[in-house]
Each structure stands twice: as C-alpha cells, then as structure tokens.
Image: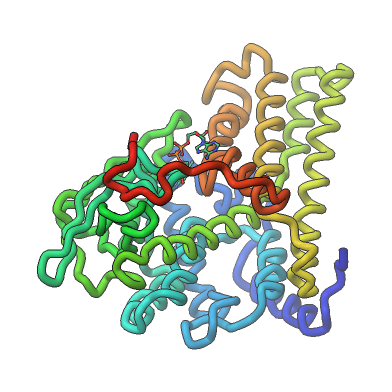
Length: 409
Ligand SMILES: Cc1cc2nc3c(=O)[nH]c(=O)nc-3n(C[C@H](O)[C@H](O)[C@H](O)COP(=O)(O)OP(=O)(O)OC[C@H]3O[C@@H](n4cnc5c(N)ncnc54)[C@H](O)[C@@H]3O)c2cc1C
C-alpha cells in the first residue's frame, strides 16, 4: 500500500482541510455530533438531521466542493476518484455529512449523466447536486428484490403520458422525496429484462400513496409506495422505452460501489467498554471474541486502504471486489453486535431501557439494513462465485421466457 499523496493530492488535501476547518466542527465521537443522527428515533432529531444535511450540501455546492468527480459541464469539478477519496478521508474527521442526499446523488447522478436527455440533465442535475431536491429509488417490489427484473409494476402509454399502476416497497426516504427513479414493465410479452422502462416520477403526482414502514427499532426509514393511475409525461423516460434494464444496471453499479466504499468498522472500543462494564474482561472466551472483533476491524481498514491505494495510484488490478468488502463488513458487524448483546446477559433482552438507551439493541436490529440493502449477503456471495472465482453461473430457468409466462410470487 502507498500512503503518500502525490504533490497534486497533497495540495488538494490542504485545500480540503482549510475548507472543512473553516466550516465544520471536528468530530467528537459521541452524542454531541449531529452527523450520527441519521437513524434517530426521535422525529425532531431526525428532522433536524435532514435539515442540516440539506444545509451542508448547499454549502458544498455554493463553495465549489460538491460533485468532485462530476464532469464540469454537469456542475462538478471534473476531478478523479482519488480526489474524492482524499475529500472523504478528511471529511471523516469532521461533524458534517450530506447523509441521505449523498446516497441519492450517487444513484441518480451517474444514471442521468449517462442515459438522460439533455433536457433532463439541465432540469434535474443542478438541484440534485445542490441538495435542493431529494430523490428516492422505486425499484424493489413485494415479488421482486434480488430478482429485480421480475418486477410487475405496469406502465401503459396513453397519448403522450404513461399511466403507471403497481406497488413498490423498501423505498428509503420516499416520504421526504421530491422525485423518484422508477422502473416499470412496459411490455409483458417479452423476456423479463427486455420489457422494462426507466422513468423519473414526481413524487407529488396524484395517485402516489406513501406508507412508512416502522421497523423493529422504531424508525421508519423506508416505505411502501402504491401507484394508482399515476400519469408520467413521456419526456420523463430515461433512455429508450424497453431499454430500462440497461439504465437500471448503471444505477445498481453506482449503488454497490457506494455501499462497498462505505464499509467502515468502528466498534471495538465500544464493545470493549461493554465487556469492562459487565466485568467479563478476564473471561478467556470473551477475550477470544474481543480479539476477533479487533482483528476484523483492522482487516477491514486494510482492505479499504488497499482499494483506496489501487484507485489513487491507478493500479485498479489491486482493487478488491466490492462484494468481498461488503460481506466482510456485514459479517464483522453481525459478530460485534451479537457479542455485545450477549455480554449484557439478561439486560441484553431490554430495549431502550438497556444501558446507553439501548445502543446495542438498536445496532443488533439495524444490522439487517447493511446485510440486506444494496444486495443481500447471499447475492454478493453469488457475485463472488461467478465474477471472482469464475464458477459457473447459477441456472436461470425463466431468463428467456416472455415475462407473462413466468411463475411469479
Ligand atoms: C435498509 C434498506 C434500504 C433499502 N432501500 C431501498 C430503496 O430505497 N429502494 C428500493 O427499491 N429497494 C430498497 N431496498 C430493498 C433491497 O434492495 C432488497 O431488500 C434486496 O434487494 C433484497 O430483496 P428482497 O428483500 O425482496 O429479498 P429476496 O430477494 O426475496 O430474498 C429473500 C432471501 O432469499 C435469498 N436469495 C434470493 N435470491 C437468491 C439467489 N439467487 N441465491 C441465493 N440466495 C438468494 C436472499 O439472500 C434472501 O435471504 C432496501 C433494503 C434495505 C434493507
């Protein structure tokens, strides 16, 4: 690994530090940091978090720090991924984030830049980058998640508008979104991947009903979205009619690189302090488990550094497969939070009444967001089998059948 910046990157890093020091507080690593409130249960704290995310993104935009890798003609700085990594490394030390807005930008931005019409790019990319408009992703359905191309939401052309009917689910932040990226079936008589079209939908359109799904930990991160005769102008098709799978793949690729890049572990100190609090620090079995948490954390950090070095030195052959990073992160997370709750013994069965307002109980339930979102662990194992180990692809019996002849949930 090469930890030294080139002269250009060192200069860039100094500029980033100067900007961040002038505009954000250093992270304190505890509840005083607003940037850790993304999953807050208290609605006022959650609303304050969203407001600050918008304000931070607007500041980045107005100061020329938004869209570091976006081409200049789309409002970005046209710099490399290495510059983005440097920015993220420095930002990690400050109490500031664009949170859910950054996730939407990572999905929608590359998709519209690659497949959108000039009119769509001019209309949507600016407010997306400044954070003035927020977006959600209307892909998954009750019968289509890992096998997304099986989706059943229908869009039928009526004059110059598409009429959409169907149901989406797990739609993160739909209740706060101005627009959605939506994939719907426009031709059910062709194989499942061929009959899809990708749309931009105004979330305030008549016929859209959003029902928040309250999770076990008490927050409503995602929603069910019902679409009943929702009318979408034909100009809102992204790419070609029937070619939506190609556009969708661009979004999914951006999503998996965002998620694998976000895989950071930092929990050893917290689980160690729990072991001390419950007086189990001398127990050899506990010590063994703590050593595993510590090792996992170091390994994950080194895996991240290796990938960053690959990007920063242009030696992409050294980069690790994103599925490896994601699954190592989620396995480590699962082990760490399971250990912490076990250490708490009977207290571990409490919820908000447990030590630290139920910090570990929240983490235990929340682990499934990472383990399922952006592709499940099993699906990422399939990716590794097929793409890294070059094992045969799993059989797909309905790939070439017309969608309306396939068996569906
Ligand atoms: C926190 C979070 C946020 C999300 N946000 C969004 C969002 O904003 N927009 C959106 O559209 N979706 C979103 N999702 C949905 C997410 O993309 C799906 O949950 C995911 O793709 C899995 O689909 P599913 O839930 O339908 O499970 P299924 O695909 O039904 O899978 C069920 C089980 O079968 C296993 N399985 C399925 N296929 C295979 C296979 N081929 N080989 C081996 N095992 C298999 C899975 O691993 C899983 O254990 C979000 C999910 C989470 C957890």
